[in-house]
Image (cartoon, rainbow, N blue to C red):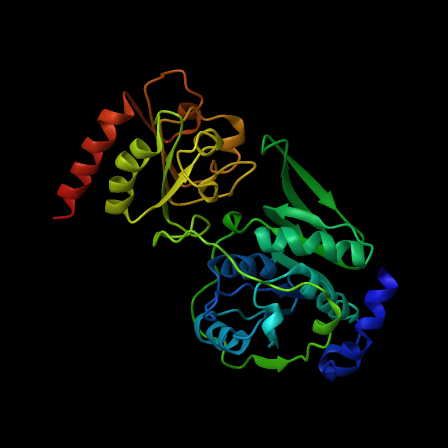
Length: 348
């Protein structure tokens, strides 16, 4: 399998710009995600901030048919002195970040002795790509990093976030995924002097994987990964109708995303794309309102880094109160409508 990929990408290696075949120097390759219209995904701005902490020159990699637009948006909206180059690969087959297509491209780029680090967000995209890339180059990835203490020393959570592991590596190529919510967004500004380099993609005809379609749930709300405020519900709601009846108005007045516990998802109260926790999404908004959820350790692992946590629960012994900044003890079905009306009154 490794030999097959190597043969497929020989042509790509020959077509790499000369600037990608330079001497042995420490530098970082960062894969930035973009939306379908070429805008930078918010997690990519946090990823750049994490990449800066490696103290290396950064090459940002953008892929897909709108890579050029994404590269220009990056130059026009981000101030990053460490950003030395923007590499773009414009091809329709890369639009959906299929790991079977992107991994061989990354293998060839990382053959350049210049790159000592590769970083990607610990998103669904990163979780798909990084293990495959690590297998192809026979390397050990370090996943879900929340702190960078040096170019070879990293901290990541283990045991559902109840402990932190400090990992040091001597590998020549460090393959890293970072938890975007653990890092601030990169500074706004401009990086006008950064060079944009286009790289050809020659591997697309050798991969028997095609994107067919996607059935996405569109809510018009902020994405949970980048939302500044999140209202989250648990098993206090007995059915889907009550979940939406009480949480939707509160989320509307706060312009908030809506999340849920695994129990709420399993009971059919909402779509599984809203699940927050160890087996769901990891979030860290400025404000997290936990409505009628107990605070199981699996859920806390996904939201305990939030700025301010407000818990609403009728059980005074609920674990969520130990993590919460503020707690409201009482029936969520009574408190939430009153809270919603009071917030509305302040907005008039």
